[in-house]
Length: 105
Image 1: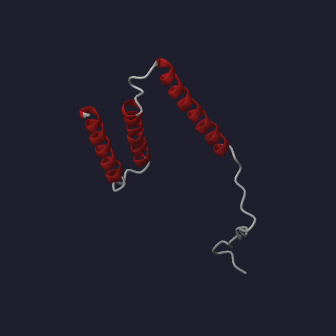
Image 2: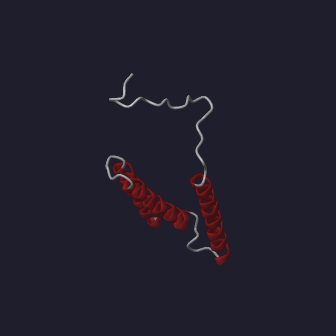
Image 3: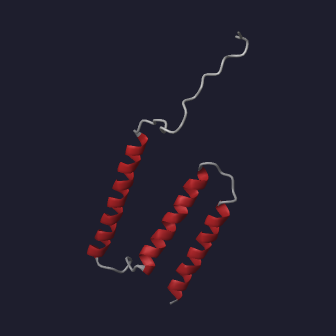
């Protein structure tokens, strides 16, 4: 019971760090820090509350396989998004060319 309480306290501290980081203006580092905090929280939950720490090797292998499949789906989705050609939506009007200053009629 003491271990679960300690893990819960750690999760609450990480939650406060996540909320506190929203008020810091770190640019792109905000996302990186919040993602790292989320990974640590997910590991704590998986290891202690889901009992992966003391489970058999097959269960741990299945958990790693599920995470690898999820990572593969993220990579495939990201590569699809990164290689798309952006077209304007049909309801958007095309940009009008503005005459340059100094060239008047």
